[in-house]
Length: 325
Image (cartoon, rainbow, N blue to C red; front, side, top):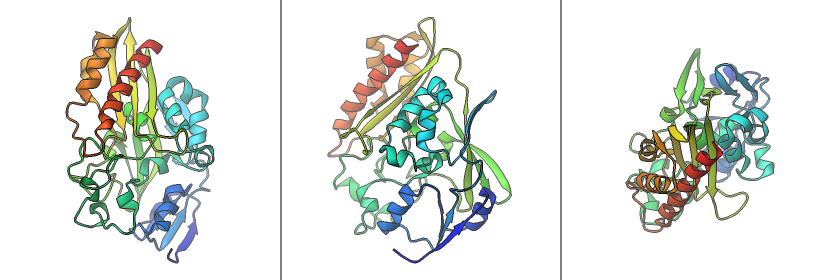
């Protein structure tokens, strides 16, 4: 690991001023950051510690919706009574991430912005596309945990536990850079490899997430998070799904279904959403919606099994969300 400067800041404005360039990195919980440094993925000259910035770990529910500070830990989000009541899939997803020790350290903004866990990207011996090389080694290599959608250029899967439910709940992020603030829908925040193979999101080098905003769900809305992994703890999912259904008189009025560990970005199952709208949710409809959401999947040599897993957990998530309602 290289030598670096370590700077403590008292505000996110100060942090944004000190990371104007790729030689500096923000540090909050530092879980993914230190992994990258130890694995020689990055070698920053400066770490800007924002962990002690006051009032940046808030969780509030107001008339506009849910607002989460960037330094709120996964443990705090998962245990918040208001989130468990109105945004159950978010509480469940971050409550199942990693292990208790990491959930007490990891921040929600850091979780959203973490880098891919692809072993070729993390491996010092592989100069892959995402690190500036000219080849995605996962295309012909070991790809059993890789993407089944949007995988023709780079086959990573997005690693964030929080991003999948936040996208399903139509969240936005507020971003500060210099003296300017902008709000970005989470669906527009992440970027596919065919647009930018070197980055997972559209944050600029001098920008900091200052808040995550989630609108209130409509009356009759219920959500379910399902995860399939090889281990119960400290494991990234093979497949996970969030289903958010707004039900009225047994009829699905609106549906939002997002798949994690399926694509380089959280993947909306738009085909399933459209199939559910205006209909009574039955076993056969849920099965058909799950199959429709996977028609455009392009599995690689070793990850075709993921299609079968997604087919099962999408169907189960839809039925559970409708039953809960």
